[in-house]
Amino acid sequence: MNIDWSKLTFHYTETDYIVRAACKNGVWERPYATRDKMIPIHAAATGLHYGQECFEGLKAFRGVDGKVRIFRMKENAKRMYHSAEGLLMTPVPVELFCEAILLALEKNIDFLPPYGTGATLYFRPLLVATTPDISVGPGKDCEFVVVPTPIGPYFPNGFKGMPAIVNRTIDRAAPQGTGCWKVGGNYAASFRASEAAHAMGYECMFTDAKTHKYIDECTASNFIAIKQRSDLTFEYLTPRSTAILPSITNDSLMTLAREMGMKVTRRHIRVEELADIQEAAACGTACVISPLTKVVDPDKNITYSFGDKPGPVLTKLYHALQDIQYGRTEDKHGWCLVVE
Image 1: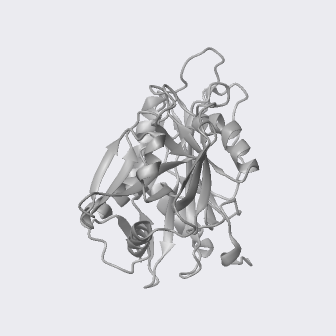
Image 2 (image 1 turned 45 degrees about the horizontal axis):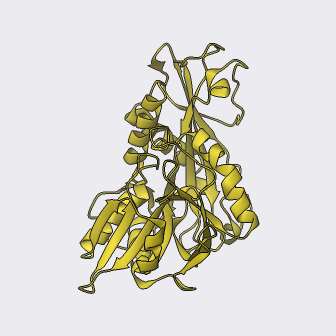
Image 3 (image 1 turned 90 degrees about the horizontal axis):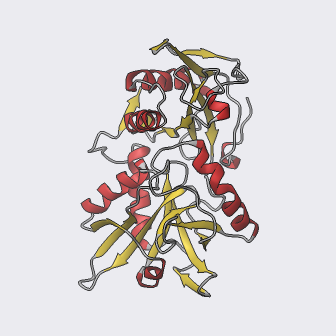
């Protein structure tokens, strides 16, 4: 194995093993590791025909002390459980999910990047319905797979900033649809808008599908903003919407923001409010925090600028979260599972 850890991007690099477990007639088998990366699936599987699948994403970090830390694994397990329930799939028990992640780590430990490289070992748990049936309805049999891969930053610029462009023409998820679950269809629905934005050099800022007045997500990540209040304190703003994924990273950052004395607000955020915001970013497991340098609104011919460098508040939040993940500071909330 010869990997240049510093040159990794957010793309798939093959490891030695994946982990699998099947559910037949409502009964889950124990997860096992295999070198076979292919999933045999019936051509009539409901996961292929009707999009009955969901997935997750989480990371393991090599800490400053040499120990391995998996960040908020049980929260990912709970979120996948919720997604599966929403799609009428047989959910993966939290304990089985965690067992599979730990087995994937153990069998691929050589692919965990060293401390200081900026790279991590990423786990992509996937749940797909395998029941062969072409009638419109949910299948109950499932295949659960954990695909590990070492990754670098999700956004090529990392924590250096990127521009975004407002989209009001293509919707990624309906207000009462599947947006609050991590299902593949949400991402496929966003491709037309996000790829068009990328072709122009931007990330895509999605607005709500009902009115197109409010900010929903930034590409495939939650949106966050920092606003200075009249008393010179700061407010952490993030959208409240039934069409966006409840981000575990965003939840962690909100906790850290409160501890830093900030007011934390989740509400509808009009696009025009960007004029009163000092710092803005996308956040998520893959990207952590990716600051926005500017947001272009082509429909209103307005550009909202936030500076060429990450702002001081987002920088402080970014380092506070990374310090916990890499074991550089006390994990007061018990977010990390430490693997000796």
